Length: 413
Image: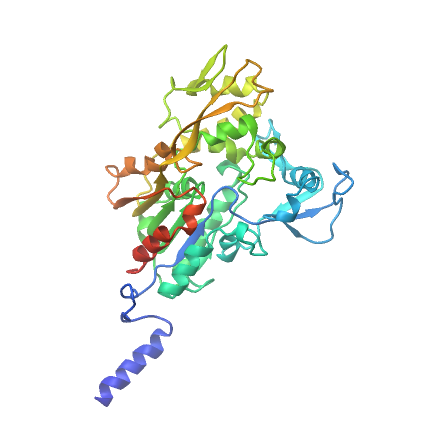
């Protein structure tokens, strides 16, 4: 008996933090080896820091120069009347038609803090105010139910969500390395990628550019939540009239100036795979704009830059090949989601259109959310679609059904 006890103790000492057998839990056993998780956020899902040394400001209350970096997104104190003008001026991008890229306003530096750290995508407000909650509920669930540890097997991959794939090339390089490093740091255990919204097509691009050998070695699975796989019509709506981010105090018209400067908005325009050329999207007394006439629509609302930014990223939306990894596609439908615009007059550059609603999660149309089902016959690794009812695009991240589903997926490694 002492011999076997000594052998058992040696194994424990050798494995250190490894779990070498299953402990009974309320909802089932903990896996032999937890698959490390990397969270990939969507549009607006990363913290942003700023440092200023500006030649001029838009308002006397705006800071012209700061000695240190400060949080600019998400910072609720910067979204109040008058101060918001400073925020917009600092975050807005400017498109260069020659280089086909964007740049910040003169004297504005922005950075995305916390690479590899899950906490910067758990809360996008560093003060951890409830309005800034993002992956926190899913992360807490993994920590509490399965014993995950932040910075060891819970990681985060934030990026400059204002920019599209063509201007986020460093992220793809860094993301590949983060996957490989996380794999090695966790006893060569394959990684699970948990993505939300725009983070899903961004991660799809990463996987499309890797060899099958690399994916088989490093990736255990992908869990997509509310994935905007095929874009969303809401991007057209934002170009037309802006978005108030669901906040009563914010003006969509005020926010529009900054929002439409982001190439990521053009990247998220509806996909040609799931919207037909002849489908009417915008109605006016004098003309109906079909999907194939979006370029003309952007010209007519006096923002042709939207289509220029779209052209810069068309190669990324034109490839809808499968990820070729195990995929759990979680989404919700049944909520009114904008799918068209109606103008009362032909002065569409100056009119706020009426919204036409269809099915989706309040932000992404159902045809985009469900487009992952197209891959089931195109890849060998399993694809599971998991639909939860009436879970809004952001609130789905805190939905108990989704948290429990992810725990169940992760429970067995």
